[in-house]
Length: 81
Image 1 (spheres, rainbow, N blue to C red):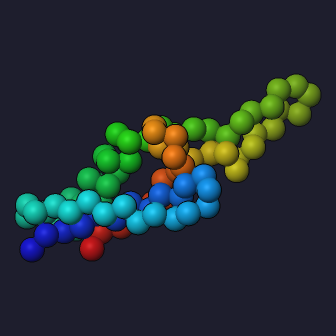
Image 2: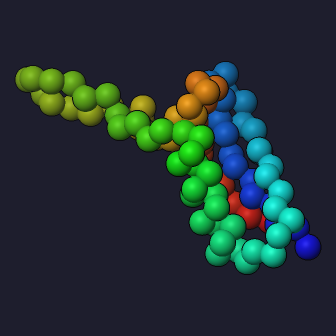
């Protein structure tokens, strides 16, 4: 039985995509979760929030997250079916 990794991608236009990746090999759910994390690290780059300098040294945490390397949007999470 195939397992499916579903990656939740939020495009910059506001569209939420459920990107499905099917695995035909025998893997358990723990392995599927690890594959999801590995996939995220390959297709995206983590970006910290924009930091403002003196005098307040604040960080805009709303811009923090996993940004897709192809520039389409951000990864919001993943789950396995």
